[in-house]
Length: 368
Image 1 (cartoon, helix red, strand yellow):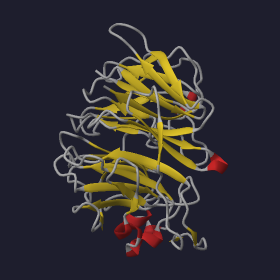
Image 2 (tube, rainbow, N blue to C red):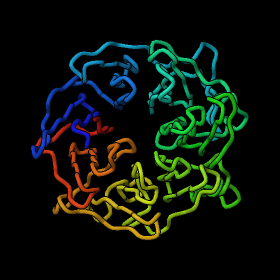
Image 3 (cartoon, rainbow, N blue to C red):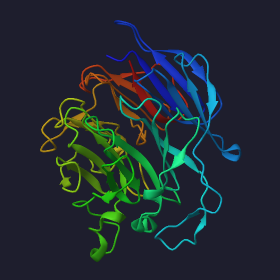
Image 4 (cartoon, rainbow, N blue to C red):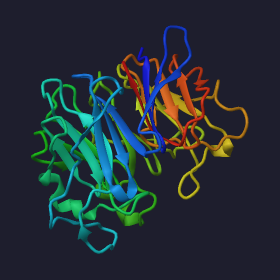
């Protein structure tokens, strides 16, 4: 099992560690006081990456090669002068500028130095030198359907989920809020929309099934069965067993089909976890009860898991990158907007809270 947990919060990065039969503890911190929105661990070389959103000072990206003891600043994705951001919701085009680095994942095992980054306002970037430089994937940015994307929770669309196929790293799938799901089979040179089967309740009836208007909150891929994808959508949960384009609604998620986070077991494509909430402008746990929903049969049934979670009213919301599973498939962790962190060593049957209360949690990542 993973013995390190990276917790990205509104006021810094917290590195949690545990030993055999020992509780999790804060081993060290980094960027205290700064808004750390995302961390990513690269299993190819052991590097850790931390994304900071410093408001007026912009987005920053740092890398550590010694498990968070020291950090070096790297380049961030940047739009060229003259590039314009277009949306399909009536906003006037504006100069494209980096507003948020929303996803960061390593390339394939045989692609040293390659990283993929998704951003707001809807750009996908590639680095081939370990984030020393970045190139905008023009083929997706200039795709004719790109102008129909629009913002979900943010004013501009954003790419928050990037799935690199473990069988072939040239096969990429990205999910957009709001813009559906897209796939490339050639390393980003060409793209096609694969959100068919999803529907959007917030659109007029004649537009609800259009792939490009689907607000996907988070998409994950089973490592052992890469054609199995799970998506937490704005108005439901969807599953594909054909690599996308054949999405089926999972209608009986208890206690709610709304949420942001989803995790899938790395070896069992039928097992997945969600953290349900009340949707739209409310966004809090159903009945003030923080629970995790788990399916072990591909979404035909769900168990509501709450052993070790708060027994008093709890209004913790869990963001899309704040639920994680380790490579072994038994240990999970999630963090909330009220600074709670919970871990499980038995696939969610029992949860253990971190004794410390942290700042609001943006993201968590389990690291070996």
